Amino acid sequence: MQIDQAEQVKSYLLELQNSVENKLTSTDPSIDHKEDQWKRKEGGGGKTLSFTNGQIIEKGGINFSDVSGNKLPKTATQNRPELEGASFRGMGVSVVFHPDNPFIPTTHANVRYFEARKEDQTLCWWFGGGFDLTPYYPFKEDVVEWHQKAKSTCDPFGEGLYLKLKKWCDEYFYLPHRNETRGVGGIFFDDFCEGGFDSSFSFMQSVGKSFQDAYFSILERRKEIPFTNKEKDFQKYRRGRYAEFNLVYDRGTHFGLQSKGRTESILMSMPPEVSWVYGFTPRKNSPEDNLYQNYLHPTDWLEIE
Image 1 (tube, rainbow, N blue to C red):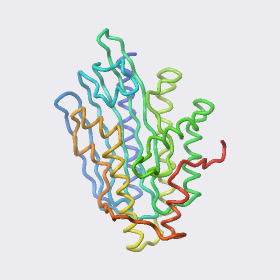
Image 2 (image 1 turned 90 degrees about the horizontal axis):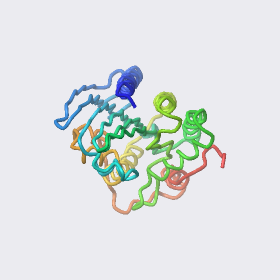
Image 3 (image 1 turned 30 degrees about the vertical axis):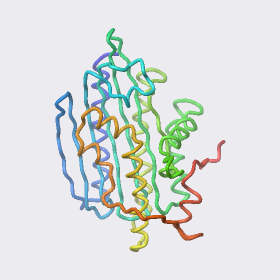
Image 4 (image 1 turned 135 degrees about the horizontal axis):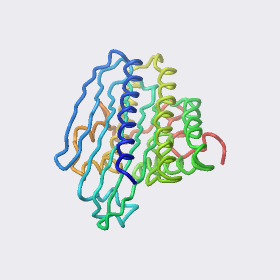
């Protein structure tokens, strides 16, 4: 594994950050935008793009980071105990959009690359990432389209890969204390090095492109739907689940904090306004109940199993 391969990934990640920014600002041109270049004392740095008060996106972020250190944090060695104590370099782009309109889903995407060097100088590398969708007032056609795009992303890289990564996503974005998934899933992968570097890198790039195509298609379709305070209040309540997951379970959040990353950038994913209501139960057969009954558990959206 040559260092220029890491630089190749870095170049792509910066291009991806720029591409997502351009799509967002062309779709929501009045959105407030802040760019923050930062450095990390222990090694590396990044660029945070923060967005607020748009006509469509209430809060969003597109983060690039490239950090290094002498010892991998525990969250990065859960599945690779042999790398405990290894030096590392990790880079990635994370995207989170919290729309104002409750009929547009919240979304999250991430693509990342890691290198770890053991004491004997053996170098290990792997990719990770995925994209997932968190609707409040879901439309089945949106969810099916989302998963069709996910499957078309996976199919060139191996038979059955979509089902494997979908299952991983369903299991990862699950809140045990609520007994529900965070949303309707998508794909999730980690420790990915199948087919060698070039194939794995191509898969990461395909994930980045497919996410943009899939999400902005849904956003355009739903952005004009009128909503009331009732729908907005339910959106804020459901955003609480998003906050709970990110703070309690998310490995990316834990890695960032454990590696002494930039807290403002790590917590970029948090929703702008959230509410918790004690003992809330949606009215039976209501649009809110539809979410609970039909969307917050693993589902074979493409009917292929």
